[in-house]
Length: 479
RNA sequence: GGCGACGUAGCCAAGUGGACAAGGCAGGGGUCUGCAAAACCCCGAUCGUCGGUUCAAUUCCGACCGUCGCCUCCA
Image 1 (cartoon, rainbow, N blue to C red):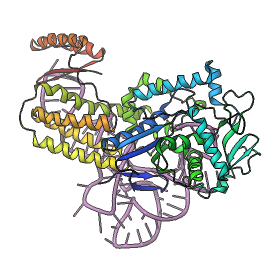
Image 2 (image 1 turned 180 degrees about the vertical axis):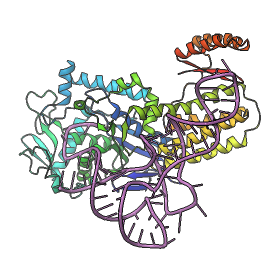
Image 3 (image 1 turned 90 degrees about the horizontal axis):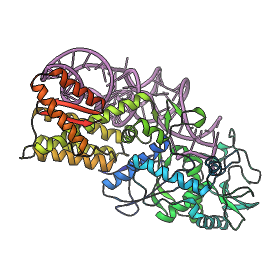
Image 4 (image 1 turned 90 degrees about the vertical axis):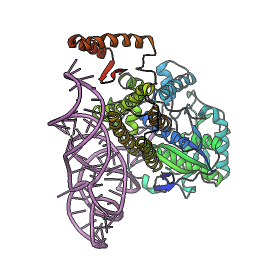
């Protein structure tokens, strides 16, 4: 059984073979930090976080690098987004990028996205970018015009191998305004001459300027991961021109392959439309967290395969909420039963169940990180485990087997944080008060004072505390 | 115009050249319970359309229809 990854370069699934056995060097394009992260960022970084987590779960040592883009890149309008943002927020450019970098990391933390091992900033790698550009010029792949440097696409026979595009293809019908200083309209900027009013600029052999967009990823990935490295990830929307250009720059300068496996994840839509400020459907994560639990959002993202698109609608998110509850209900049942569970042998049926579920989730995840398949196996296990617990009182060892599996797979491998084990068990003062009320209610119930007992339950429910009566007593949890 | 992806039950969503096409949500019927909640059991699909390859296709190939992305420094 081997891990298989869909490689965008070959357009097929391939058995994953890392360059160094047992180690994975992986890079994912990071955000441009000029405003708050949105739901689209959540999908992308949850998708790749899950890849990293699963690889580690499978025993690989992963070195994960993700950049922060904090240098100004020019928009078509001639404006620079970071510059624009700093005017909007009345901040210095580097203050602005620092501010949004921190907010981005906060959001990712809440989504249980592990921080990359190295998070290099573009502004800290200008020197390396300049050297790389010089190498390209020396090798004849780039040329300077008026203080700007362009990559000559025609010089690279392989240009287009990732996106499957021929050079001529993109010429007609494109809305790109062709800069006449380029030799070929398809050429892209490695370095741009900065106009005097442009605040973000650095000295270079070609005068004051700032780097082109693609070069930073080429430079920072290879600096920390070597060349070639194993996996390069990013959103499909960046396949062309960004990733295509990264490859071209990297391989032209050195003659060495850039990255062995390219992974692209699908986009997120809001009610069928791409998120756009102009469409008024732009949802930042800060806004989303006010309405939806971050773990639920993560679960929602994992319910679809990473390569496919996701349509974010009220209905689909609601269905995901109740699905996750089903899983966490099992978790609650386990931790509430454990303290009073009988000693004894491990229940053979439960041992078998954990074994087949483990095999099943690994088989799914090994097949190009099929999280929906793995989650389906978790639901299967949940149903069977609930049935077993309704039928008999399994030993503590049996319950612990399931608990350990859930913690290991759900929390570590796919990053779904389960409720902490003391919630609902009365570890805090509020919990002790709830226990007190439950004691009173128990007495009311044994006296068949239903009206009063139900009133306590209803009022607790209104406070976000859900009761559940069973023959063995009443359990409760925060919802 | 070029390149690419996708179309599976009311909704979401896996998957396979052949013996019953996962799973979740919603819905219906039951069991349990003082009631509720949770849980368990039962109920649902000629896999976009039309051709082709094959003993056999939802799965492979082609055409068409539809939706979407990229070619605009959007994750």
